[in-house]
Length: 193
Image (cartoon, rainbow, N blue to C red; front, side, top):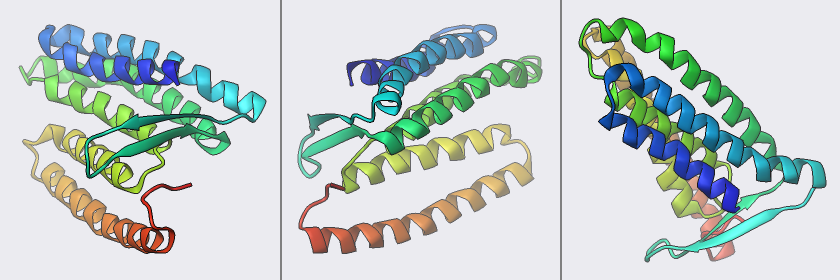
């Protein structure tokens, strides 16, 4: 799991430090850090895919979260490469996507920060084994997606689509929460295992 966590850190760090760079370099910085991070997260997931083993690590957070188990099992090991490859392609695409906005003096820092946060949260959501932490990561994923959707916030239809997305995501999270409440009442804890 050391490679996985280091990869997540690099992906998130790319979005964070890109804020300090010029607009023309932000996309390249995020792509570089994401590429390196995604290579690292692929190492344990491919190991699990080819061996059938499961890798897990407990991390202790302050209450009310407590102990959270992160697991790369065959199912999450299938999704990690899919997420990694598609998101890396997305960061490469972002280099060209952002170019027209550079001429309009639009700041792209938020776009790249939320892109990195989205990638990090998508990778976490398939490995976390605790209902409360899953909901936190799911919300990070939902909000970062929302801010990416409304990047072109000068267009009314973009804002409308973003609000529609946000409402839909929060209605769906109510069903997920209801399911987790039922499971927690039956099992007596917040863990998925």
